[in-house]
Every structure is written in structure tokens, then in C-alpha cells.
Length: 459
Image: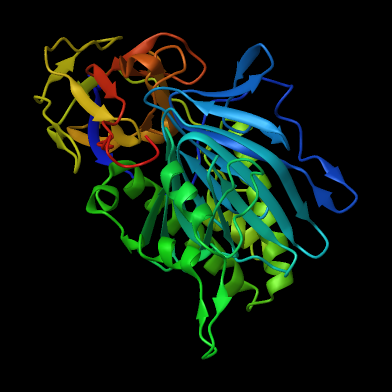
């Protein structure tokens, strides 16, 4: 008798440079980037977990990863949700849970590679990762009702709750100005520069006090005094540990490392040819979007090789196999541990003729973003033979996706994402057949518990 063994090993992946999502069937939002002349006026979204809505007059539409948005779009994440807005040049804006933004302006010049991005934060938290701006005309701006931050190639977080805005810089510098409550323009002589790893918080009381201060003056000795700027400068502090240790912030910074690695890889391959590098970043961003829409996991490194002339074909991490398995089966689950959650599954082996089922009270428990790697084997002459790539893999339940032979990526489906938890399992079938010949133990997927304190601005 020949037996099939299915083993599971869970590992936590915080971000791997590749992207994956279910196929997007919303034809209204998955068209290519809108281009007028040399100006690209669209971005696209990645729903990391939970829900993301496009807010329209009197209604809202739920978005999927890969959907395109245009200038003027208003977006809102749901409870236990997070999303990323991908701009054509490779820059990204990460949105925390229960965050609302409007993007009045999206313009990327495909000629001189300049960009003009303006974002209004209504409530919640966002984090910008801006690829170094190409021209003096380029601008990236994020503002709330009382504060505006502008950058020229940096990474920074911004939040708004009630009447309080906060800005902190994780890379380089950010220019921060309070806004006049009536004109909504920058208050004269009040702009400050936030250095790397620094933080400032501005509320409506601060804005009123700044307005009462005099504008800059020159004393008889020639010294320039600027009481408005001095007022805000005195509020600059080190980034609070509550933000440094925040789980969403850590997740965002891991994503930024991926972006940095992609930029460095492209620039190295093109020997620092800036204009050509920026063009390839635009092409890579579009390849990522297409992969989402096709339900595939893009191999970013090999795609960069192709875009820079070293690889001919688009490479996805989901490979198609051609050989079928006609073996009887056996299942095995193994004890698993992850860095974030501890998982225990007792080892079980069941031998049957045509079908495998696992009956156990033990459950595999992981957080969204985790990856579980399964292996499938047949016993031949008393030896295990790996047939992982010769069988078909399927997820039962709205708990994730199969990104490659035996590779399960935990992601709650839209149907259950608001509940924060789902239960499913993995089934193995012969290629071209529907009946399962092997099934894993139950898999419980939980939305990450983000330890976001309530006493920092933006929540």
C-alpha cells in the first residue's frame, strides 16, 4: 500500500518583498494607470487585511488589492484593517485601522519623473515612504485640519485624532507647519524642521497661541527673533516609546525595508542611472498591481532582473506542475512554533485507501500574514518520496490562499475579516479531480492584535 503524508511547518513572515491577493473581479477599478500626456494620475491599493472602502457621495465601495484610484479619491479602512496605497514612482502610503484619507492630487510625470502628491488625513494614522524626489518641482504633502507636513524623499508618520496632530520622522527630515484655522494656509514664520527620530504634536490650542505670537523681527543688534518658530521648536521631542514599540509601526518599517531593497537593487543593476532607475520603478509598481489582479505572487527579484534586461519572462512564485499523483494517502501534522504566536499540533498519522481525514481537537493557530508550509509524501518500498509539487492544494474556508505548492498564506477573507477570526483547513487533491485525498487539521487565523495606545495622536 502506498501512503501520502502531509506535514505542516508554520513560519511567520512580516514581509517578503512579494505580494499576493485574491483575483480582483471589479472591472471598474482594475484598469491600467490613467495617463494624460506624460502625467500619470492614478495610484492603486493593496488591502493588507480587513477592509478598505472608496467613499462616494451617499455610498461606499469596497476595494480589492490591485484596484486603481484617481485624484480626489476618499478612502477609509475598517476595524482590524490596514492598507497600502502604491503610487506610480514606487512611493507608498500605509494606512492604519479606522483611518480616513482623501487624495486631492496624484501626478507623476513620466517624462522628467517629477511627482506631486497631496494627501488629507481626516482621522487615524498614515505613514509615508517617499522615494527621493527627482526634481525641484516635486512635492509630497500630508495635512490634517491644523497641520501640514511636506517632504522631499523621506519616511514619516502622521496621525490625527480630535484636534491633535502628530508627526514623527523615521528617515531624513520633514518640514512641519501649523495651518491657520480660517484660511487653512500655512501660518507665516512658523515652519519647523523635524529631524530623524524626532516627534512633534500640535493641537488647536497650540495653533491659537502661535497666531498670537509676533512674526519674525530683527533686533537692533541684527539678531532675528522668531517667537512663532520658537514656540513649536520647544515642542519637538524624541519619538515616544509608545510609537517605537507599536506593532503597526514595526510592520510599516518592515515594508519600508522591502522598498529600500528594491530601489537599491534596481539602481545597482543600472549602475545608478537615475532617470532609467525611476522608469523601472514605475514599471515594477505596475507589475505588482497586475500580479494582484491575476491572483499571483510576484517574484520581485526576478522581475527586477527582467526589467533591467537580465531575465526574459515574468516570474511568479506560483508554479504550475504537470505530473499527477495517483497515490493513496496518509496525513501528518507536526508541532509548530512561530515567533509571534505559539502553536501546538499533536502528530497524527492515518492510513486509508482513497481519502484522508484528520480528527483532532488540536488546532493550528496563526495570525494573518503567517505562512504555513506543507509537504506531501508517498511511501514507496518503505521510503518517503516528496510529491508536494505533484498534487493540487486547496484552502477550505475564507482563511487564506495557496501561493505555491504546499504554501498557505493566512489572510482573512472579506466575508469574515470584520470578526477578526476564521477557521479553515487545507485539502489535497489529484490534479484535475475534485475529491480530497488528504486534509490538514483545522487552521485558526486571527487578525493581528495591534497594541496601539489611545494616548498618542492619530487613533
